[in-house]
Image (cartoon, rainbow, N blue to C red):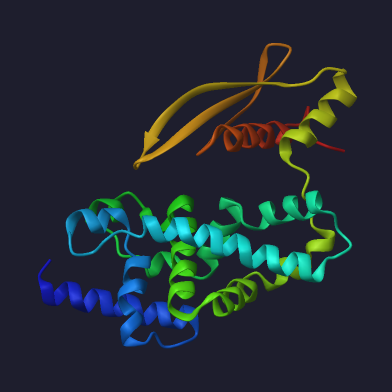
Length: 241
């Protein structure tokens, strides 16, 4: 890809990002926003474009702070443990990926050719990570107050519905159902791990009396176990009444 073509592509992506942000990106901040939307596959092909991996790390903290600040300010009746569960629900990869998909974040990401062919624009992990990177860029460019406004505006409905939010994790719910019906507890086993697009993915089995009742995958062992429990809950035998 020639320099002029790269420049045109980057400018097109920035224009789409400005629509998403609802504001113009000042010239002095364009570099940080370009980095925020640069996937490692693009960075690998074009060395002058650092990937958004470090910004994603920062964005995770900014996101958590913005949600936490809102929760402790508006829901003083909840205890710390309850707020922690509700925050985790809102900032989960699943939640972030769904919100990123709604915002069409996949259309603003700079991908390498290989990643485009493998469906990078639709991958949950990529969408969630880029969303966090954009949050970090907003923080670096405009400060924490603007970053909080950005995050809280996007999650406005979720934050308003916190009081009625179902936060019980799938493992706990499955255990309650199994104990009630069979008077035993399910057992979990990490059946394997693999690297997919540079990300380690675990596979977990959930068993009942030695028999498999669910299989799940996740970037952490806990996430894989949650996924396995969710699959088990969907079956007719273990579906909650």
